Amino acid sequence: MKPAGKQNKEQFSKDPAEALEQLMDRYGAIVMRTAYFYTGDRHLAEDISQEVFLRSFRKWTSFRGDSSMKTWLTSITINVCRDKMGVRMFTEQPTDPSQMDRSQTISVEDEALERLKKSEVLQYLLRLPVPYQEALYLYYYLDLSTKEIADATSSPEGTIRNRLHRAREALASLIDKEERTNDRNR
Image 1 (cartoon, helix red, strand yellow):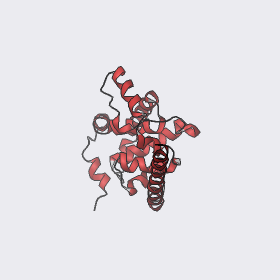
Image 2 (cartoon, helix red, strand yellow):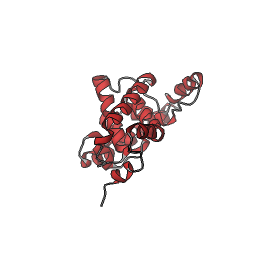
Image 3 (cartoon, rainbow, N blue to C red):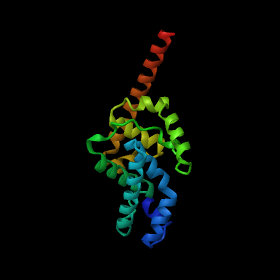
Image 4 (spheres, rainbow, N blue to C red):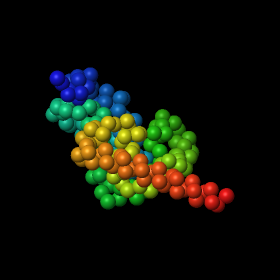
């Protein structure tokens, strides 16, 4: 039986240049949103996206297909973000990356980014510890399975399931606490 990734790789050209173009078309938005989530900076996210696809081009022939393309590219994206950001990760407040649309004009983008900064759920999410933020983002925003998250972050799958469980509890607690505070202030 083939791993899921091998079947996935066969959907792309054997020529690395053509495969790169196909990868960018199919996964460019996911890579960009993930980089933006980690950095909170659109320009840095664009640089990181370019670096991710450059690395995937260089490693295309050595990619064994042990994971799906999405997981592989997410893993590369996370590693590039960690390399670029180091300890600065999550110091800026990123906005809801699923709402980012690169095809709009700059002024509309700026307006959209301002609205996204006010996303309530994301504001609660940003109050959680970084490992919880990462687990929730990868699971709910990128629809990765716990196995895929484990592969992408080089963490045991049990740890990912634990983080998701605790992150959901912490998020629910934060929202509940905020609602009770708001009810008392009315």
